Image: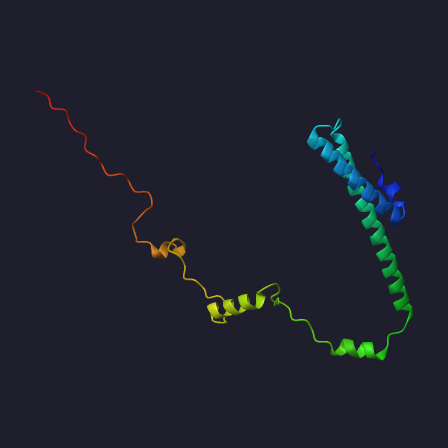
Length: 161
């Protein structure tokens, strides 16, 4: 059942689609047999899954090769033809992209941006004062040390009679 990807690349797109459908049905059948306890060789599922993955890879490779060939033909055609004056003008008058600012996108992005602007007052984030731990030696009392000695405890002396 295990196939080589080189053999799959030689198939037509219709053959690849038919095999993909056939193998998906076989995988369903094998999983059903496994669930009912009728599957004799569980490795068949693993092999079939890998074959399906190889087939999908071959389909994508074929599609990529087709797209690359089309792009190559388009680029070659554009290189041989001359540019029109209108395209030169459009490039010269096109606005430059602004760097460093990402436009909010997604659902509710404008509301979030407005809420953030309202919260921060429309300005950049304010600097926080340094914490006590990061204040350094200037924030500590002179003569204090981290390691303090334990207070001396007096032991009870036993009384002799």
